Image 1 (cartoon, rainbow, N blue to C red):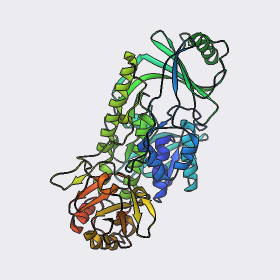
Image 2: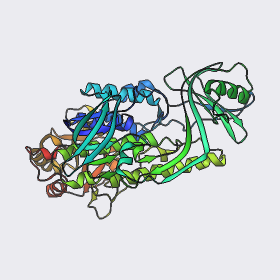
Image 3: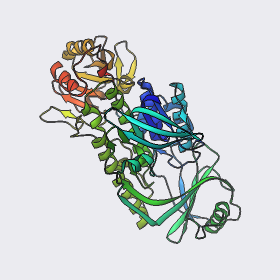
Length: 517
């Protein structure tokens, strides 16, 4: 029997995000997957703005940007005539508080490759052909049985995370209900294919009855995504069916689906597990919630699950009180419900044939999802502003004490908590908290242009930081490791911060490992 702190079952985007988050914090884990080879399809290719911020924190933003694009123009045809032209969303410019305001399109297989490359750089890897057979748990941990290459292996872990998809073995073994509905009348085939006779400059949609056929360039590749109704004859070869269907829909004999590299048949499936935790076993991603593909909510919500859970597991393993890990389920279950509502609403627009069914607005971006009123969110102001405890912490350009132009997100980057102390009068507070907590809490005074600035201060030269956080007077804003506001106090004091911290981590001390992020 081998011992590990966390056993992750499933190596999709959710499991990989969790693994990277744990690896950055020095947590011992294994990540296993029953598959013999890594996933090779496009599937979820829309990366939402909030997920882009997560990827920036994980250190993979540059390869993600290099692997994709902003999406392409789409044209709907009747024969050779263009009857509609547009995009899912028109690109917008970054703002001081939102550096990545647009959906970025990357095939899922490439996103997973980039996450695995980051994981390898952190000294870990995915174990393929390794299947979870069974597990039992007690007060101290989980004993799991893995099947590897014809033999079985016992693993003892302090926690087990099921990130093993909609058909989750972990969820089924726990007996957790997965209520929802599957609509067999709403189905669609998605295929990654090589297609001759079309260019990559725009996507094409041909209306066929109450449905349609589309051929869309797949970002960063020479492939196209072909979408059509599934064949009525289940034994018809996929290549033959798509080849015939595209010609019939387009009326063009010169378009040839030459090769299919991956395909799947999607059925309208909307489900939410009754709970995301059973003792020392937790669910994340599709194991806990399954979404329609409309709006690109499924993968992104799963990635946020992994990002939320990782720092909490690390702190719990280091001795933090139960409230920290207990907050995972209520926070992420509420987020999953919201994402399901968004995706379902967009699906209904497609079913009705609404003219704007392909349009995507800010509701899909993940920037407004929040944990207000949650167990980790404390706003002590009598009259809170537009940004409150539980909200995503906005970015802003500021100037470092050395005169360099930086951003608040640069201060947040890493596994630590961040305190933004607005007002030069908070300089003693910043110095005291830095001495008490050490590197697990990095405190910075945020001062106006012309105010005194010490080595821990940043200068809000253009007022974007105060505007972003909707602050006028002095205030203390404590930012969680996952980029959400935990505490807001105005004007705030050392006592307010230490009381909040003690509730989540125990008494503050440089030597106390329980205060790790």
